[in-house]
Image (tube, rainbow, N blue to C red; front, side):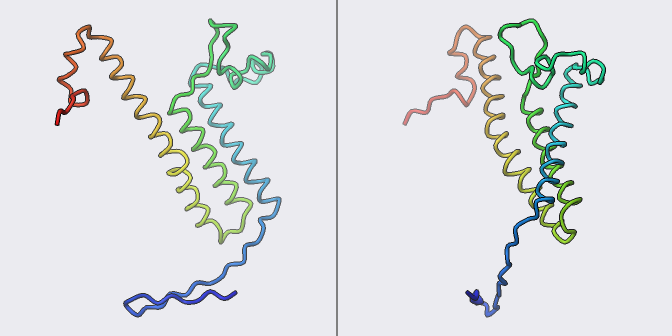
Length: 171
């Protein structure tokens, strides 16, 4: 089916060409997935190192797998042991690692003429999949924690009416 040209009110005609969508070869998909996973592993390793876990291969091999940093997100049975903490910065770095790995994999394994579209896709993933969802969750959480601390410091809650966010408007 042919795509009809579109004429706007200025008299300019825009034509669209039909792009035949080819299925991406398996080698490109596997390579991009591997580099994306490598980006996430790199980010988790940096987070682990920053939080004080050892990245020395000898220490890692001598540690049981269940005690590795990546599996130490929470452990209720051993509350005194160190666990990894994932805040918004750590989640953002893991997302950036994934997007960067996928972009690098796309640059290595895919056709060179597809690289500009890969860059646009990476930017849209950073904005739409990482930055906006985290800002919608992290910023209100931080604001709530700040006001929660403020409310716990004062015993007389009527003093909170000084802040505009706590004022009640009567109509």
